[in-house]
Image (cartoon, rainbow, N blue to C red):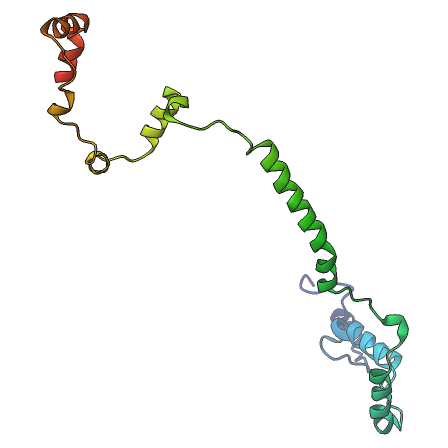
Amino acid sequence: MSNHLKNSEEFLNSISRKKNGFSVPKNYFNSIEEEINIKLAEEHFKNKSGFDIPNTYFKEFEENLLVKVVSPSPVNETKVISFKERISKIIPTTVAASVLLFIGLNSFIFDKTEELTIDTLTENEIEYWLNSSDIYLNDIAIVEAENILEENDFYFSSIGDEIIEEYMYSIDNSYLLYELN
């Protein structure tokens, strides 16, 4: 009796020796809920298709389409602004503004009578230009080839030995030594 439970169906049937006339297929109770839901859904839906076409639809289709294409409703018209018209309205204003700007700039900025020469430049500006530009000795030689001075060009000046001697004493000799290195 340890193998049999008191309330099990098999135990009761073995004691009473009665066989039940009803039988249930295997896994019946596992799938019954799903089957019932499927049956209810099938009954709920109609068998009729939701798409109906009128009998004269294909005969009247071309006529209805042409009527809609040929005469559009005036409510849906969009206003088109031409780019050419817009530009033609702006051109006179831009021309007037550019003429006024040209006259104003010429009268205030470019009306300077001061000429720029090397004397008007500061030493810092000249140093900056020399440092930032690429000047090669060949370029200088080409420019100065025409202006080479010769010894005979200085015949009118008389520099005596005394003047040269004073000049030598006045300069810093240590500077010359650094130049040689």
